[in-house]
Image 1 (cartoon, rainbow, N blue to C red):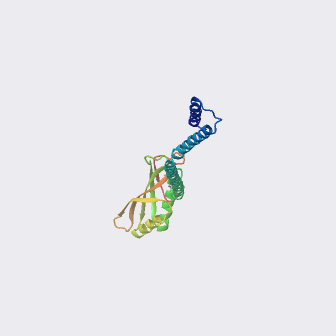
Image 2: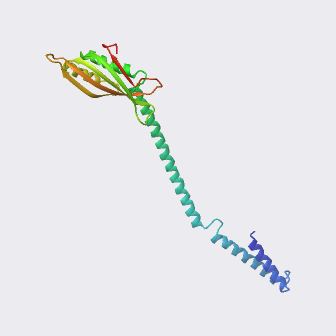
Image 3: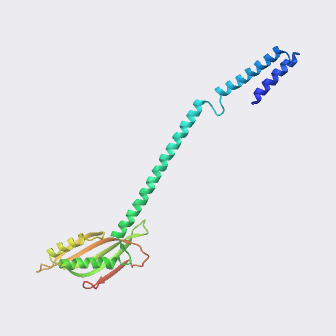
Length: 219
């Protein structure tokens, strides 16, 4: 029972005793009971209008605010999970793309030159010599650029076939420059081209520059 209720009850007892009235008298006893009931009603009414923790309206507002916070945090968690899934999927697809189209640095030069020589042979173009240059890509520790310069001989029709063969390559190869100079008194062209491809770092020690010359299969 609240302290205020006990205090009011004791006050009633005190008031009755102070007037020299006896609790054995029915009239006094009725007044005491009515007074106690009045105090109890007042205390009950107070807690109805001012309940512990706030009024019903205040509790409803707090519950609504909490529900809104929970919904916002759930939405934020859903967005974060979605972004995490997209990042993981993008990384997986990026790794797959590199695996399919990028060359390992250790074997990049020989692989690219062999592919160029195979395309030249299929087109009827004669390979003369090759040189390469490796450059790391700024801001990346795992990807670099390999440039291969090649010199060839062949007719214009052979050159077109050679370009078509290289265009069909599964590798990500970029033909940056192509120069064809006709030889005097001949239909043969002196062909100089620069090919660029992306390579993956694999811990090998490929020199930055190298020069190779010779017939197909010897570069």
